[in-house]
Length: 282
Length: 85
Figure 1 (tube, each protein chain N blue to C red):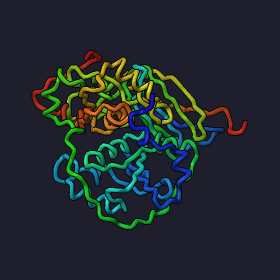
Figure 2: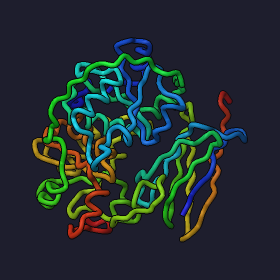
Figure 3: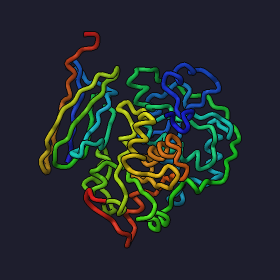
Figure 4: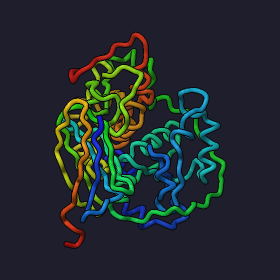
């Protein structure tokens, strides 16, 4: 059984074999926005998820015009083949993947295993600046079909299958964030009532690559009971780990109705008056 | 609470090791890359945790720790197998 879209995954071997190819457009997106400056895959450009993928005027994605300007400034147009990679097992690269799909970019891929696999294989990194010739990028209108909103999550609680992809400790409310981050948080801890806890990490191998199609199907379809032809909403804390799971559901398992709730727990857990469940029970 | 430490190989710090913290549930809770001093840092709660490190080249190390409330623990993950040995 193959992945639904096997072509979206590119191996580190394949990227290494193409280094120096002018048609290779690598884009690094990391939680640690200083990682790129310390050393990146030769030829890669960076996108800063915090400064460049978040609107400066509201808590939202950047508007279409800003997205077009950003991509164009990196030497990318709407027909460019983009290969994304990043740290944290590709969490933020997967977020950028979902984001590019939101604005209709057709030819976007992930380097399977991300920066960690590249580093552990002791492949080259450089601090050399990557020369870029700006292009004009024309985005499509946002694809609302892959993005779940706060109101939709509230309305669909108990109806649409929801997957909380955080660790069991965050799901239960014992941790407010991944354990590499300080635990101060203004919002309540816990999860959306009825959401199943399937940590994103169960979809990944230790080297950061995605598990096999058979393993993913067993996890999400056979064990969790998701309907391959039905809807599903994935959420986490800030929408990046849930993007990893969205890639698994929508692109690798072919759940065409899967959505990412990018507002995630930092939005839901701060809302007044919504139901919250604590502990390990759904 | 803090759980911090270093990854060492032959007494020297290992930069670029990936250390993951596996929670009492048995699932991944976080992963960090060691800095130039081989250091890592997590913010867990009281309980039993597994630290699992993967070093450049692929060799892995594992260590189980039990934290009590309010405790800060310093851990050394030591790679005894030298490269090429």
